[in-house]
Image (cartoon, rainbow, N blue to C red; front, side, top):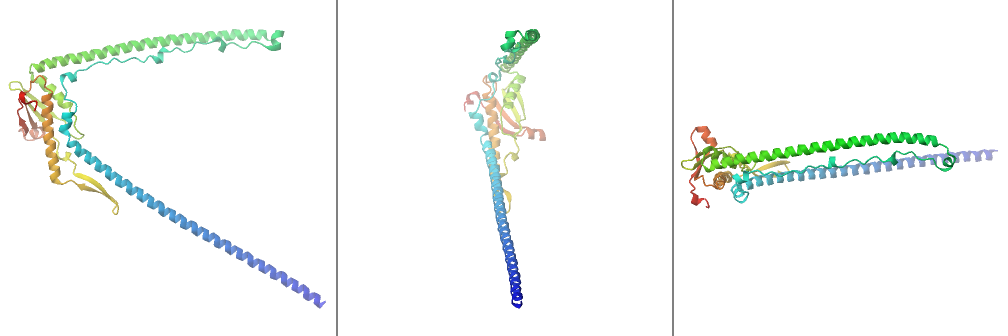
Amino acid sequence: MAEESQGRGKQVAQRGSGRGNDYQRHQQALRRAQEQRARQAERERKAAETASKRQERERKAAYQEQQAEQAQVRTIGVEHEVELLGQLLRNALVGDPPTTFERRRRTHTPKKLDERPWSRPEPSPRWEEFAPPEPGGLAALLGLGRKRYEAEVVEARVRFGEAQERHRRAGEKRLATLERKRAEHREAEAQAIDEVATFNGKLDEEREAYRAGEPAAVEAHLGAVLDASEYPLGFPHEHRIAFRPATGDVLVEIHLPPEAIVPTARGYRYVKNRDETTVLPRPEKERKEIYASVLAQVALRTVHEVLTSDPDRIVRSCCLFDLERCASNGSPDRVVAGRWAHTDRAS
């Protein structure tokens, strides 16, 4: 009995020891799983941090590139403005000639009326689209459904007649609209022709008055010439003209551009470490030289346009004055004063 008791005790102890080992292994497995999850979470955190830093670097690089491009675009814009200022006279010499009486004449180009919306009739109704199906098969052989078919035919003919009537009315309305559009088009064309003829008739009268040296006609024509002269954006476009028929002198008071027309910046540069765009200033000496060139070009261009728009040689000389200074001090401030004889026009 004692031996049997000892055996059972050993078995119980072994089972208890086995359960303890299982518990320890389970705890170890849990710790390993927790450590793996912690390591995985740390790897994911570091990967996300690396990706965030990379995105921030890419965003910063893209931002800096955009700022540098904007500075370059602004620099190109300033360079273009200065280039235009240097071509004021050249554009007048090599571009379209100044406005003349012939160029001011209008012509009428007839416009063709697009009749397609009203010239195409809608398709006529077809009986086949309304006719009911005839009885077929055994019913037709036995004569079944004949009365119902005949009634359906009567109803279909009524609907067909109504559709034909709607089509007829739509056609009449379309043709009436087409005739009205044609009449409106003819009226508009006649009015346009009359307007062109009236304008050209007045222009012919102005030209005859110009040839006669009438001051109002000469001043009006030369004013139209200077009005049609195209300058860069920001240039003043005011002028006053006086013609002296006794001497053939034309006095032109023009509004000269201010010195601010010359950009004070030579360019722009983006500084990365300060995250700012700095202005590259234009030297004062260079600004004054450009401005002096602008004034000279405006003066020569104005004289060129006045003289070349005078094929009848009514104008014998042209004097220019600064309109703004004349208005401010009441005395003419002569910008360019010279006499161009007819023999000197070619030069």
